[in-house]
Amino acid sequence: MNKIVAAVLAALLLLAGCGDGDTSPGAAADTDQPTPTATSTTEPASEGVVVDITIADGKVTPQGDRIDVKVGEPITLLVTSDEADEIHVHSDPEHTLDVVAGDSAKELTFTVDTPGQVAVESHHLHATIVQLVVTP
Amino acid sequence: MTVSLVLPAHGLGGSTDLPIPFLYAMVGASWALTISFAVLALAWKEPRFADPGEPVAPRARRPWIAVLGAVLSVWILGALFLGSNEQNGGQQAAYIFVWVGLVPLALLFGHVWRDLSPWRTIQSGVGRLTARPDGLIAYPERLGYWPAALGLLAFVWLELASPDPGSVTAMCWWVAIYIAVTLVGGIVFGPTWFDRADPFDVYSAVVARLSPFVEDGRFALHNPLRSLPSIPVHPGLVAVLAVLLGSTAYDSFSASQFWQSRSLSDWAHTATLVGFCVIVGVLFVGAAVATGGISAEQRRRLPGALAHSLVPIVVGYVFAHYLTYLLEKGQGALHALLDPFAHGWVGEPSIHYFLSTHTSTLAALKVGFVVAGHVLAVIAAHDKALVVLPRAHRLTGQLAMLVLMVVYTFTGLFLLFSV
Image (cartoon, rainbow over all chains, first blue to last red; front, side, top):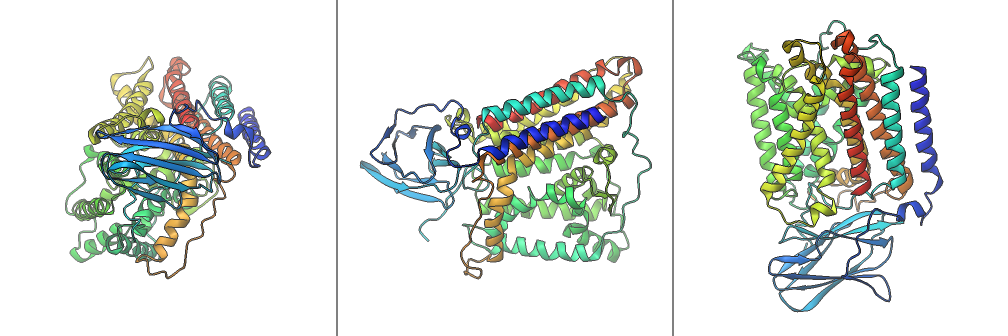
């Protein structure tokens, strides 16, 4: 019993030790996320991240991709669609982009100020377009 | 408001936690594995906790808590049914304070849900008026906890897999049906209905056995491993816990890139949610009965006898998965609840993201909860196995359960790391 209690305490201490070290912004451990599948649709713009989104024939491209961004980094969604839709950005607070059918792209620029994951969803297609992985 | 109807894929919108770093998952997994086999090899050989003793008659419901419960219920239901379809305080309260808040409430204060429950209050009033305090007919024993398991499944379906999980209207319908079923069940079958069939009451009762602070309704600091085996075993207990653990895992899994990159029907989501719960339950039953040297009747009783050991795993994973949801989204929910009709009574919400902004601390907490739950579960299962397994099979008979718990924990850590 004592051995087990000691082992449990040791485990907790070890984890707590890990936790205190690198909480400063830009901690290396946090940015090293699992297999961030690179998306061909993301191009490094002069400032911030630009996400090209195409809705055509009832499908959205990309769908489900992860995009790494930093807290406070501007994110621009460029949406071209062949049907009316609403794009929802599930950050706190949330953002909405009304999309109309047509050739010209609709644009929405925002920042996310809290670390976390923010889903960008097509309301009509019930699909997650991209998930923003927002690190400090 | 033009920014209307921002409907999320889950019950409530907003951002979710970052994945935990790989190193954290690895450290957690190593500790879980090491401690598991240390328990098996080095721990005590005679049961220490598994004799719950005589069941103590539950104390009478405390009237002041019943009044508090009635006020809170009217408030939350009023906000839900009369509030707007956006930022509905009642809906947020149901998903955050009722569904997630129930767990820390039961851990800190025991099964106070029993005192808070407005449905129990109404039933006891009706029982007094009709001079039938125990209902009209006896609760059928063979139903066990199955109605509660179905109710829990219905709730997680609404939140995670229904056609429109963010819909306030859908929740109003769900709650209306729940209230009708609960009141009719309570009046017909008496208080036993709440003990076995009310999903939230049963969830709270089960978690309360893990409370180190309250035992049998009284404040008494004690080892939770001693009170945990006293969960009353009835048919469907494993199903209740399987729904809780399976649905939390599904909630993680459904946010994975693998799942999001697919366009699937509502039926596929529903089937996958049910599949997660069924797999968790079937694996548990399989691991529980995987021993030699017992009769068929004894084997049939094993899953129920060991079911309590799942509770710490459920609680650990619920905390890991929903902690920021409770403490950060909870601030928004409280604000919406204080201003249920959006009249600006309490100003603009200011939410403190004290967990999200400390990513490493949050990751360590999450791993800590999962590993702590795992360790408690392994010890609880080991201790009970010493009672229910024949002497010759005590070590080998526990092995399947130990391996399964390691599998549950590794899966939980993998989901926290990869999603």
